[in-house]
Image 1 (cartoon, rainbow, N blue to C red):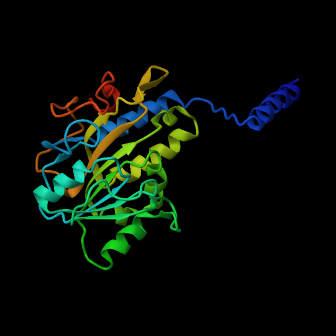
Image 2 (cartoon, one colour):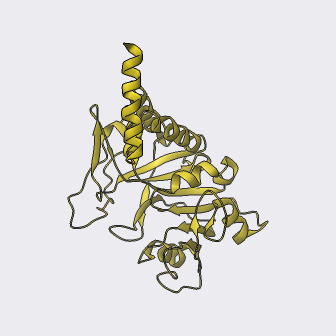
Image 3 (spheres, rainbow, N blue to C red):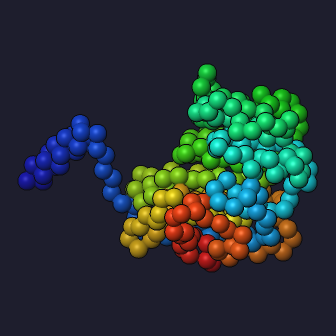
Length: 273
């Protein structure tokens, strides 16, 4: 009887795959709780400033720009207020990349644009983060870079492919993570958890902000924004006495990404110690 049931289940799975449908069991609740605890443990409270104006394209970062000369900014929007502000206020040169648009949204002597996507391999359309940094800086010893990355889900491929030594060259990183409801999948959670563990060895989370574009996904009493932004600061740049394992959200400088959509809050499980 057991074999009959197994064949019946396998037949259902074959039919589902043939129709382009994939099913996974939900992740273990204890594993989800453990992942949330690891995110909370990576948090550190530091003073922040807003860069890039209100709404989408504006981010909260530590006021620690002195000595940063280059920003890598994959994913080009219709505006470049973030890059324009750091160029104007700090003289930071921004390298932009996006194969979906013809050029940068505005001209600036400190902007340089490549019509390529950031990805896990380099070819005519894609370039890895490591190859991009080498192409722009060569052998220049610049280990205090800034990364601002919003690439619609490709951030996972890019961060997995990038080695830790490369990522440590960035003093600060602002990354928008997409499709985070995949943490509820039994096979999705271990991969995402491993990626975040890689980041948190060298970086602290100094801010999180839920993008109100796509709402909250919930499973087994745990909610997570489908899209949210994290600001990372390399741990050697944390101020002395910075309170670790704690954030205060929402921050007074937070603004909704989509102005005409109700704002959403980052669930406390991800930030309240």
